[in-house]
Length: 112
Image (spheres, rainbow, N blue to C red):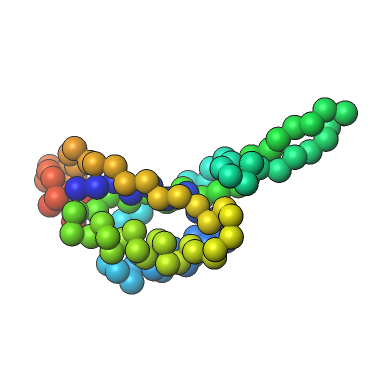
């Protein structure tokens, strides 16, 4: 089991949701986040001092069984790629355990 976290551009969210749905990854969590990477945010001058701001991003999280990892990651990559800085990042983490609270199912069966 793997936990996939993708940080993407806000305008790409609908494309990512559809791409994951198309490859039968239905369970996702979405959060509004702020951050910066190689883009280094944006710079403002406020009352004479330079401030670096954070850019709006979307964090998409999903848990998948091992046989869906490449498919899910490929769907996210394809739907977010523009070739410009700021396309985002995908992190893949090992998932030690998953428990479906309603039924008590554990492991890959709990993910679905």
